[in-house]
Image 1 (cartoon, rainbow, N blue to C red):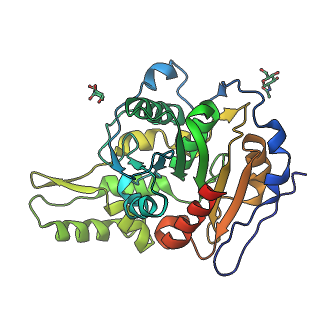
Image 2 (image 1 turned 90 degrees about the horizontal axis):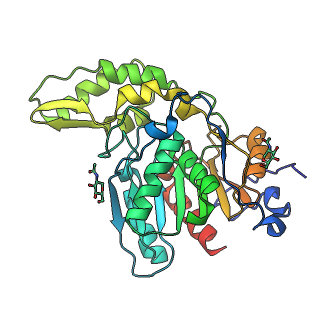
Image 3 (image 1 turned 30 degrees about the vertical axis):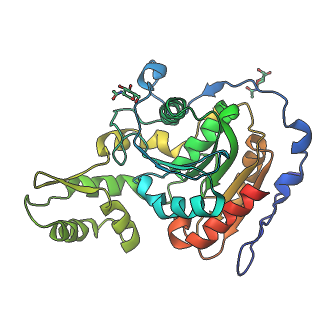
Length: 318
Ligand SMILES: *[C@@H]1O[C@H](CO)[C@@H](O)[C@H](O)[C@H]1NC(C)=O
Ligand SMILES: *[C@@H]1O[C@H](CO)[C@@H](O)[C@H](O)[C@H]1NC(C)=O
């Protein structure tokens, strides 16, 4: 029964329901709700609870008129809330829901901290939802943000009405991307003060080229280049991310499951959700559907925004 199928539809993706959803989640949906962390792989051993103290996150609210459960978007490593801006606006129109986009700690305009783990990022999100008096949300997370979303659903299922995990699995991530080289390349970038922004971007891109081959990834990293009083710098906390890359690539171990409706959305041109992950997806998320968007890479929402939105809308209506 753990034989999961992978449905690849050719043109538009229609709700291809994987076998995972047929394995009796209806019966077990309100059983064991004991939440506990077994262990966090690779976390600094001493007092993680103290280090994981929440920080305030920056966020944007796109206000829908309806009072249905809001959508909350969490971006991936080196991303920011603006990655989902146009998608958020479109979803407000399509669903009437309120949509929030959030900057993770050490990303975008959120507070920096030397610690960046899934426990810490989940605590940040929990604090933000409490501050905004959001008692329930629909969590949509991409890559690292997907792992934060899964962790939140597994530890605080009452906060999460539905869960969407975009192109990542609840398993240690095989290093498909050479992040240490990216981090070093970003640290090594030198841009003179007081040059125009376009010049600064061009100089930085030239210097990144050696270690970051894909143009789209360079453009993505360059969204983090900021100017302050004529000086250019990276707004992401490269030091903390570099020190915690092991944590970010891993996934905490859980002995509980999230029984709410769950969608795993992969790109057919990406290897981040592989059939080897299906048993673990089924164990932790027994109600999960797994769908793939054709011709999409790891950055599904950037490659195929319309298909991405259609899949989300269909999932919300299912
Ligand atoms: C975090 O946000 C809360 C609520 O807006 C505010 O009361 C608090 O002062 C903020 N903390 C910091 C360190 O900015
Ligand atoms: C999971 O938790 C249950 C209940 O606390 C316990 O009986 C069981 O041994 C645990 N399983 C693992 C793999 O830790």
